[in-house]
Length: 210
Image: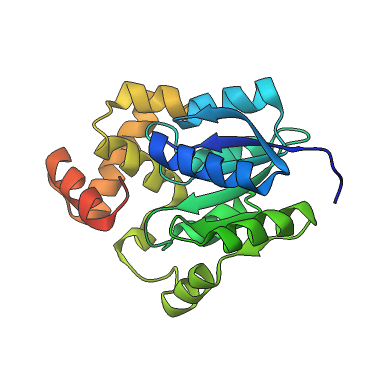
């Protein structure tokens, strides 16, 4: 590999997580953290400003989620390589992350050695999937579970509704009309058999989408 530092953007809404990852990267010597962000909108702005080589992206952030960030990056030229990290069971997000342009997928309990391996794999131009994530995906197909009946967009809306955001706020985040969000909300409630927004929030907490 070249001696030139590999620039990195850390995107995670937990400061302690960012600090831990930053410390690991500094110990490795080759990587330089050029920016940090706490939500999807900040992440997109930071990418435009700093043009990092790699983005380490939390899949579950407040507001604009990791999957939506990935989708928007697909339309950009010279977009960075993205290593997705997740604190919860990967579930449905694994295949969606790769379909949306992710280059790697790790859980936050991965070892420092595996973290380094994932970064080296990305730098070699290949994709990396944590063995634990691959095993989970094999044992628990994306076709299972209550969230499987929701579309990708419905899952994004579901997450934002669960965070307490109103239709207008969600519409602004996702660049669609309030009427479109209302349609998604009604479809989500019907598919998940929820009668109120309160039931949706409880369901989101139980399913780990918040």
